[in-house]
Length: 388
Image (cartoon, rainbow, N blue to C red):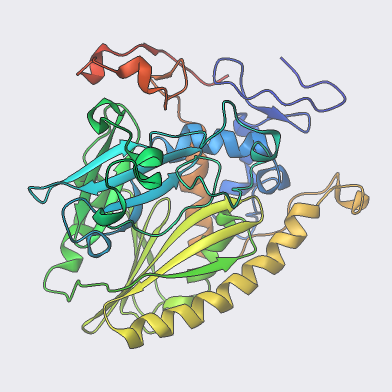
């Protein structure tokens, strides 16, 4: 199947992902993006402006990875609830009465709408009173006192019977809370590798989260936080440890851990800082900035604002590359990519994009009616999928 001259978009897993006349799962499209030397370029410009590419990320990355959504400090009491939009899906993690963490898809995935409105299908998370929706901006953690019977928050997130909601895998590493939307993901420990011990003995109370808005695609926002830096990059399972003296936003850290796709941790002395990235549109990323001390958090926040401005400048060039306003670039390669951190990030990203999934939902993953009463993930309908 090929897109027609009007660049029609096809993005169901059965049919493939096509936009701007390109097959977005064709390995040839990413040859220069995964180069390991100075010939490396940024991803094809379509990656920074295409709703179809965003849907491909949702299928291959956000619903298949351990995604950091916050910290245990945000939900200290039984009943407290931490919401987060993972890709196109609204989920939450709630503190149970016994102290355990329970992950679920939100009750009102489309908010108060009977179907997804046109303005919510653009790839930009909207500012809406229904924060449980997978197409709207998130709110901060919700205290148990706001989730009583017949409250608006209860109706959006939990419904009358939360046990009927589709479950989400949840685990922790240190203070960080991770979720995975896949049916049977490997343990997070396999992803951490030797990184797992790096938080041992550290002060891990991360305090209040600070939100910073950035005007760049998340695939540019991440590398801007750590490039340039002085040191060696050592990939370790699903995480990278930047040895020596990292630069960029983590200039004061002794080591930086980057857990793909969206968590970066800086370790220096007794302080631990972290940035959780969340895409909110093609051209915007939300940084959730944390620190084990107020001074450490403030220092990272200032550096994040600088990195966000750097990423914005790159994004503006990438998003316009080869468009009618820049016609001379249409037949040229994408802009060059500097920095080993950015190169490793793209290699991880492309590897995930081109990985064939064994299973995927053959119906909306958030349709609670399909799972109501099933009681067992293995009883739900799954279909084999492969890359086209």
